[in-house]
Structure formats: structure tokens, C-alpha cells
Image (cartoon, rainbow, N blue to C red; front, side):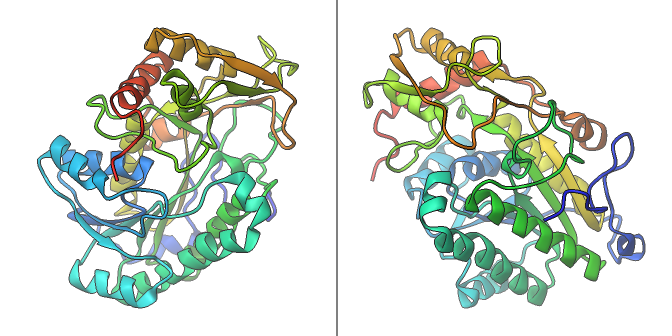
Length: 369
């Protein structure tokens, strides 16, 4: 997938709108009432459900529970006072999606459902292409049949591959170093093609960086199955005593302390970014691309120190060899989202660590069941 794609948004101006969208049929007074949230009981999606309800938008959740638990629904009800509608289904099941859209008419879809473990994707690529790519196509076909043509896609900063410089803007070259990242790129290309072919579609690609933290109530948070793939849940599990030490992959990068630098964003900020993008896209056909990040990077050792301060506990770590494919630095230029959506991240790394620790310390084994 070539990075020099004219569909990418130009810097210094408006985000990209596909040429056909200038005569697209979309009501400028259209208002959001309800949204289908795929993967709705997952980490980022569940926090976005809280944000949707706070903005007066009714979410309808669909999830096959492959990486989440139904206890999330009880927690969402405690936080919001509303028990969201949830249907247990797989988005690859066209008949199930068709039935959901018929029974629960929605104005748009937030598409979070997907597998996301990089290592697993290398070992089982067909599983990832089936779930992430085929699942997205099946969902899009049923959306079109139901007349729902507004979609936000949960993409990833992994689509930038190994960036030549930082911070990263939306017009950077795209590439993939593993099947997980490639599946995200494939879906992005499918969505662009769809919006170009049919001017009634509005698709938004949200490329976000490293979600961290939890709802300040401590009721919902990140609960990965098995060994965590991301740094912060591994750190909190070490702090709570579930694991012995954090593996720090590489301490000889050309960074301020030798460890990798990443852009960590509070999951609540990320959820608000999704709502802002949804409200923007609902009256604007075409393809829209936004980075969701803080615009600043933290090293692995700085993250460990933030969690040490938040938890009051020493966090053991071991320096290991670099992992193949890891880059020294990766953080976002989020100015386009601020300019166009009026959104920017608010919370600090210290707040991310405190909220993540509150979740982990009150739920040491994750969600019940």
C-alpha cells in the first residue's frame, strides 16, 4: 500500500475529502441518536461507551467476548446509570449483524472489533486477515444494505511503520511490519475505496498511539487475557504482584535514557476524541484521517517511574535485547485533530498511571468471571 496516496490529508489545510464527496447526499442538519459499537465490551470501546452516553448518544454494543467479559456491562451501568444494549455476536456473521441493524436502527458505526496481538499475528496471519479484514468487509456490506454509511474505524499508529522522523503527521508514508499492522492498512484502503466509489459514505480513520489508564472510578480498565502485549498492563500486573518483572526491550536506543519513546494517551482522552470525530463526520461525507495522541513521548523507564510513584511500590524490571521491528521513537503530531475537531488530549502521564493503578489495585485479577 503506497504511502504517496492522494487520499491522505494535506498538512496545513482541511483534512482529506474524496472528490466525489463534494456532491454527496448527506443532511447538514443530521444529528446523532444511536451508534453501533463493535467490540463494545473491550478496553477502548467500553470507555467510549461512557463518553457516548455522556454526550446523549445511545450505544448499541456487539461483541463476541473473545477478549472481554460480560461483567463490563455491570460496571458500565454503575458508572452511567444506564445498562447498554449488548448483543453477543461476531461481525463475520452477516445474518447476526443484519438482525442487529434491523432491530436496533443506528445512525453510525464505531468499529473497534479486531484482534490486536502483534506476535500472534505473525504466527497466525490467516486468523488476523479473517477476523480483521473479512470481518470489516462483512460489516460494511450489512451497513450498506441497512442504509448506514457513517463509520469510524479504530486504526493504529502501527500503520506508519518505522517513521523517518517525529512527530508523525497524517501524511507520513504508511507501511506495515507485521500482519496485524497490515490488516489495519488493508481496512483503511478498503474504506477509502468505498468512500470514493459511493459519495454517500463518511469514513473516519483514527490512528491512535498508546492508550493508557482507566476510568477514574476504577470500575473499568484494561484486562488483557493471558500475558499482556502492551507495556502498561504488564507494569501494573508487576506492581500488583501478578508478575515478577517488566521486560524492557532495549536500553541502547538514541533516546534520553536509552529506552524506547512512545506517545501514551489516556483512554478517556481517546474516548472523547472518538466522540468528537463522530460528531464531525456525521454530516461530512468522504474520508477523514486523524492522529489521536498527546504530541509528546515518554520513555519506558519514565513510564515505570510514573507507575512506581502512583502505586508506592517498587517495580522490578530487566533489560532485554531489542525486539525486531521496534523503533526508537514514535509520537504524534495531533494538531490536525485539534484544528478540525476541536479536540486535544488533556491528561498527564501521572494521571494515566494513577487511574491505571486504581483499576488494577481494586481489580487485581481483572474483571470477574
